[in-house]
Amino acid sequence: MQPAFGHPDSPWFTPSIDTVAERIETLVPLFGRRVIFTRFVPPAQPTGSWVQYYERWPFARDPASDWLWQLLPRWADRASVASHRFSKWREVSALLPPTPTLVLCGVSTDCCVLATALAAVDDGAHVRLVADACAAKTPEIHQSAVENLATRAPALAVLSAAEERAFQDHAA
Image (cartoon, rainbow, N blue to C red):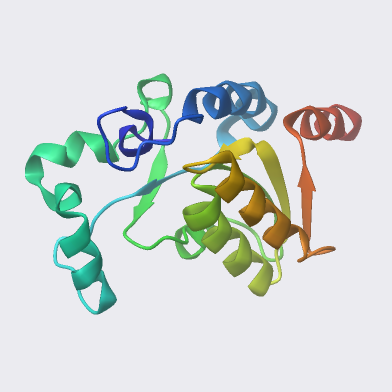
């Protein structure tokens, strides 16, 4: 939930991010301080395949773009973990108990969300993907990623924000 995906002038702008942010805003209070915001940040010095990646996306490493890598203003006061990797599981898992349940939402469904979900499942975590609190560049790309992730059941469940809120209400 960063300006890199939320600002219309960003090459990585995700058109439905405002709708997703509103849904996420309804979920955050259910988890309080257990919410872990993650941020994609370009590496100081790309290596390997990242060299070519940033040749394609040079704006990302431009110091004038540093503001793109902060959290969106509505969550600026929240703690976050950052990584130059698409998957944030390595950073998040260090903060969780063994075999956790991860409720996952955000952008982009076909990249960071997908990579984090698969890494978490691969590591034995249970994942609840809140599909309507995720987005990609287009609805078709988002839907394709959700359908791909749904095949990882029962380790990964796909549900809506309303279903997650009902689940949390029942669990409380």
